[in-house]
Length: 282
Ligand code: SIN
Image (cartoon, rainbow, N blue to C red; front, side):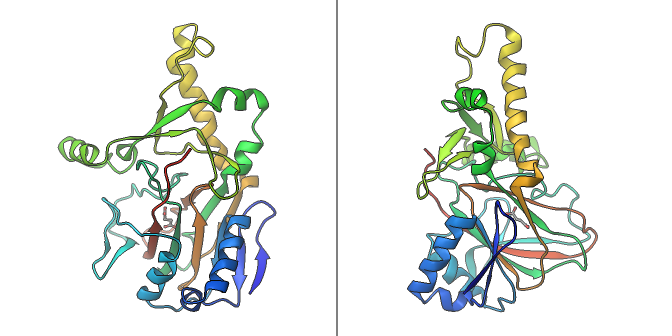
């Protein structure tokens, strides 16, 4: 296996690896896991593997789960189809900086995304290193946010296009989750800035240290949250990947955010994502 870094801060391409084989080879799988922890996102080309192999590889990291809004392959539950064409609505959920399924108590630990069809140009995906985003914050900001918790809601993006009735039903089925604003990576121990486009507000900001006047409370907390969610957009924390059919990205969802660039309509773009259930963030 050859490893080529794509930036100094995040992302590496694995060369000479077949993921169908890796699913059956403990040593190879162990080596890929180690590279994932080191680089946070791994990329591979020319993975002409079956859906069964895609699922089998992802399941070596943990149990897979369906998505309540985006449909799955009927034969392979857990393999979510992110299929877009000229008739897809313009409000596509993937083109915002986000960390998958943080509206769950146990957000996904990672995902394995395979490109089935890509537009002739455009439709790249970007990832951001949120451990580095935390590390680079001023000490004075870290001091304020280290004890904070925040609410994450499925309604924030997926609910927006639904009728009020459907949105409330979705929310009742998937109630908001509350997570630390700064989580600790369970394997590397890194501290990670853990707010993204699913985050609605801080839940414990209103203390004597943070709030003296009304302006400190709602606008003050909202400004701080906006500042933090904006950090993923800093190019120095990012890697950008150009897809080809059978390209694969494997990412650690605990310490990254991603953004699928929507510069390809009306072209077809079809991606299949195996999302791996994670642990409760702490
Ligand atoms: C996602 O947001 O998980 C999908 C990314 C993509 O379609 O490139």
